Image (cartoon, rainbow, N blue to C red):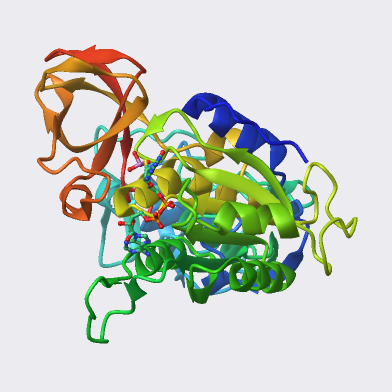
Length: 424
Ligand SMILES: Nc1nc2c(c(=O)[nH]1)N[C@H]1C(S)=C(S)[C@@H](COP(=O)(O)OP(=O)(O)OC[C@H]3O[C@@H](n4cnc5c(N)ncnc54)[C@H](O)[C@@H]3O)O[C@H]1N2
Ligand code: MOO
């Protein structure tokens, strides 16, 4: 077991997390309607040419003979019609619509705006109009060629790529399985909303916050409930959850008090890799893994944690949970779900501060801010309630602004900013 007593910097922690967590290997065939956000497990091939047949790009006339000014209209071909067996002779034309197959013999398509049609079904090119040979014909295979690669393994599917699969007639695609995440909260003081509060108790907000967030991102979430402040019960719950989960996410109980049992439980049933980061909020953030078998050291998880259930322990203060989830656990879950490291990182942009902070903060801080677009670019203003226990502040923020260790801030300073919930 490796365990560092040092407080890691955020960027080192994120880099280590992304490098030491590799995508899970379980794959499945998922239907089109469930593919958004999923990662392709294999290359997908182009099954047939697109366009499948030469077709018209415009509503107008397919003509034979680009150097003429008149053509006789003899056919009518709408989208959905077949043009098989039809051949345009020189000087002839077919009324045609966008997407309809052009008949054999077609040299060009002219837009209907560019011809006058007489009662005798003769069309005449309007003066000043020039025909570029072959114009307005979408050629078979000009976009996709049978046998080439349509989409590559590792590609994260979005509405456009799902549409592309549909264009090729696919009903399913091979994707990595959805990551199974069990969410626990921890603490004797926690009560689910809906029950009366006794003295000393508070409502459990972290669990529902994390569960809804994870579900919105497409993870397969299991609600593990609230763990009591008891080592044995915590140990058992973690070990059981590890058997049917790819990851466990818990909040609370990772600090130094003797009622904080999560770290010890992890050490007993698995491997604790890192405890504590030099960040504010979220200092006690912890990660490790638990092997899929019974008992500690069962050999099913090696030092890298390959094949093991990955465990992320978020500090209990609600804002600390939110910040460490968004900045550390979520990028790692995205990596485990199959995204390349660069795409798994939190989305970031540069913004200018419109506030001052004279008192330097020793730790790297993620300030809860409102991010707005001004004429001069993005600007950030901190929300009023910055306590790590004050979810009301974070609830009015839409981004986190990062300030380096020991930094003072002056208006106009450039800060790295991470939008909140933008990818939902
Ligand atoms: N002596 C020290 N005390 C503390 C330190 C420290 O370094 N030395 N660190 C502080 C920091 S920073 C944080 S953050 C907290 C985190 O502690 P835990 O992760 O052990 O969290 P708890 O003690 O269980 O809870 C902290 C706080 O959050 C409330 N909480 C917990 N879970 C939930 C939940 N699911 N929903 C809503 N609220 C929750 C809990 O009631 C506490 O008020 O430790 C500091 N202490
Ligand atoms: O992580 Mo504590 O996060 O500073 O309240």
